[in-house]
Length: 437
Image (cartoon, rainbow, N blue to C red; front, side, top):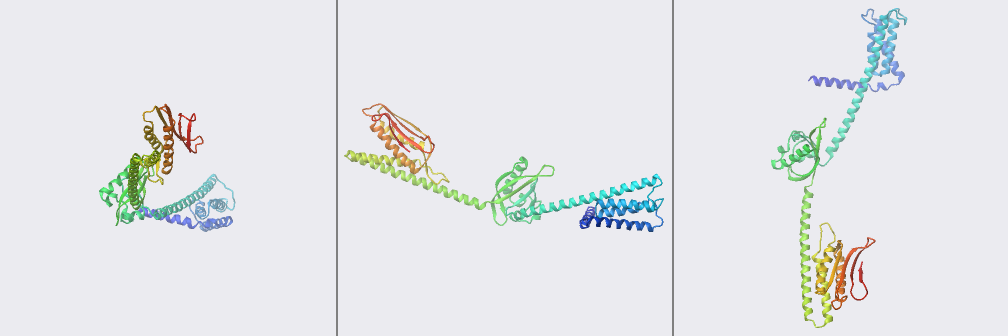
């Protein structure tokens, strides 16, 4: 009760100073004229008293206080000077004169004058301090109102917990999610609102944030009133006290339950699509292998060498296409199916080379840089390599002549195109070289 009474008196004093603010905005002449009237009023009261005990200056002190309080420090100084002059002229011997006969009167006048100036200065400082405090309180109130508006207007739950995990502050969204009014939510812990199995991970993250002083972003399951468990993405950071100590944790969360379900459904659909795609590729590859086998059987039955060569060429081309399907790579998020150039071209060389070379003293050297090739490009490139490589191995070396066939795949000098080079040192021109860009 004493604290409330003192607080109420302080509020009245502050309100009085605020109400007198328009008076302090009067013109200078009006303030000084009003000050003179106040001093003359106290002078008249003093003059009408026939016998006054003590110093004649004391009855002028209220006029200085009142003038300083109503107007400003300048008015208080003016009231001090005017009161001193009136007291000397009318109440100190010899009267009707500004002469002072003894040292006591001089000291009394000096003390009164100093006290008057000091009083005016103190009242001015007090009023300035009150104005500054009121302005600061208004600014703080405006900032708090803005902050409260932002917190309450946010559609996401925002909360503050102390070191024991008790809710200190929470917006209306948080209270609605947890199923309690805001005033009843304060002082509660998560374990008081949710099952232990759900609350324990949440409280563990809160303790980790307070102990490490490192903000954390985690997914948490929360029991929402009337809906059951839902997934939230929570961002939590340490809440620091006035002395820099960790006083608790402050956090904001977002309901991502529907998004998590959509992501799970999308991942399941992608997995099913990938399985179907691999199955289709596998079936296509098997069909191609079947066709290749049928062509090989047909070749053995065909007596015409030209027809046999054409069948062999067709089987070789289908083999390239089957190899592309065998190494087809479809990544999640990519629009095109790709093939590793090094794996595909090197595999093609390893397949064609031994068959065509046989026991002849021919060396096959490869230098292939790796790059992801689109499936259609890989087919064209594989067909070209297959044709060039077979031509070199079949026709460049006559009568078991030794030699070297080199296959190079690298980026060109300008860095904009890739070059496939198949070269041999066999018969014909000194270096048979074919390029595909």
